[in-house]
Length: 214
Length: 214
DNA sequence: GATAATTTGGACCGGTCGTCTGCTAGCGGA
DNA sequence: TCCGCTAGCAGACGACCGGTCCAAATTATC
Image (cartoon, each protein chain N blue to C red):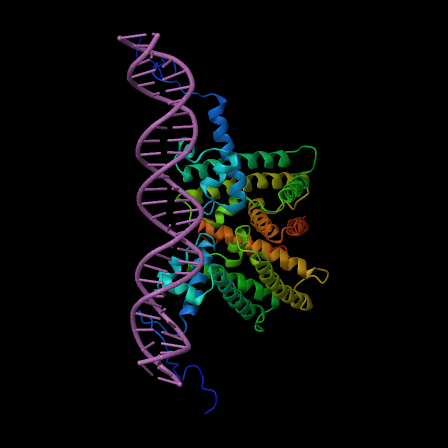
């Protein structure tokens, strides 16, 4: 038998087993996943690692076995979030079933539902960390900006498709519009957290799409 | 003489009389002013009292003489900022020399210059604290939302003036537009801090005013 | 049994908020 | 005059928390 797949062969790891029964090998994964949840709520600086450790049921001493530092943990969380979000974005923006512009609109609706599911406590991780950029370890700012540029690129592509379909004026600058979209959207998300309601998201969506050049 | 009113009869308390001279208020004032600077950079939670104390040259022990708690300090700072910003807003939005829409545009230009003056390290205090809303003492969120509503109201009035002048379509919903403006603007400010440059602010302004219904 | 791999409890150190105590300045009363 | 009282202020302290590190504990593999 060639290389065995991950789920068929149990690795039978050596070493001291976890005290609390946990899916072996993905303690690190669980920490990152929990980190995404907590950091989208509280940001990076004011979040203690004890908090996420306790939530996952991992002892404090174990942390530095999985990550070099809090900074490294933050980076891992951010990467995970970026990947997760890029997938989500593609799922909507590449949907061949609906028109390009409608895809973007549906993305905002889905995100709005997502915020409601978490009672508007969680925001956008990139937005949250962006606010803390002056306090973050060096290089974080650039990574955040790169992620936003990536999202912008995807939206810009979608807008160009809309142009080809005649949904959007041909002379519109899709890059600028995409940047404009994300600024407004991040602002709307922030505001939705503040009022603990969907209204800002709905209002933004309404106004943005209404004012798009035909 | 019947019950004397509080301000006519002086109790003639013993002991050293309250100073009430400038010195007392000056120190408090200096703390608040410095607080505005620091909190617009770092937010509330992750800012230490000691930091602002050191910057003003006030000993640690004196802080709780001027403020009941860190929370009370935060409230004072926020009030000061709101008042300052409302004045600034009025200065631009009520300027009779230029057309209403141009007033709003000039405000954004002025704010852009302001961010440049501080090397894009300082953002909007309301935006910053809004991001931390889940970690802030109770009631902060409502105060922040109230301040934003106040700003929105002022912008909405300005937009209505623009309508009267024919700069804006009569059927435009000024309240919605004002809310839309502030969401986008806060997002742009946040982004400008991230990239440490004026481009997001310029781009937002451009797009927003370009897409206003005529 | 030796070794390597993995997990863990707890110690360390620095920083934070808030308090406690005490000093000084100036006025009232004896 | 001078003692005591009160208001303004300052330094030290305490309790706590957060990030980091390490040595011990526990198991699989050789």
